[in-house]
Image 1 (spheres, rainbow, N blue to C red):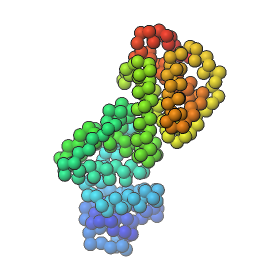
Image 2: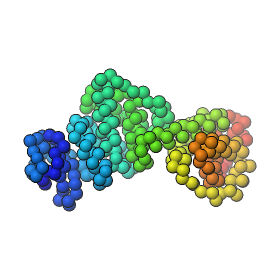
Image 3: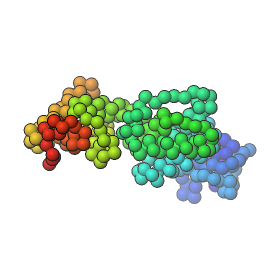
Image 4: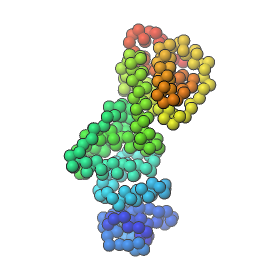
Length: 291
């Protein structure tokens, strides 16, 4: 393999045997080297293949600007997340997470610690990703001695949410705010406290996450369940009223029109939640089943 570009003393761009552009990393791998020189395979510790050309360009620029140790510990976190989340992560995580981790380490070392206004909601809405964030905090402390706070675990969690949804970070935060608003309406209207360990809550949050994506993207869900909805309206009046409260709020604030399918599924999830957390009178009004 011949060096195509030297990013720093430890990182270079080359091509593998299949002709794919790759980034190789190793201590001193590119020290006093130049394009056209051969790469010593014995010095290669890590190889990165980024298929998206735009992301590859950003990745190369990032690799040239942050310490190799920050990139390696970020890769360790990403590998841990891949195994424990069991979900496909967009290649952008190799840019956004190392950039965040490196900047956060520098911030903490300089005494600049940011609070995360969505900490509690991220812990509730993205529990698995938040656990990854806590593990990331442990890895950073283990390898650098820098002790991140829980706020940083929540920031890190959002990078993994972003990598799963394939959205820009500002969009992910918008989605989270919409989820926060919907949950507040359900909690106040139904007078319930969520059992965050229940399967019904997990199903509800999963639905609300995708509902918020549709609201943010103005993506219609469907409108072919009006007959069923009318039946549910009489069977579960409180849950239906709560769902229409959400519908009206979303239309007023986001100009998104919820169709009958959306109202139906919101009503179903709210009904299931009310079984565990509603007051006695509301539980009696709602009935014991949803079919």
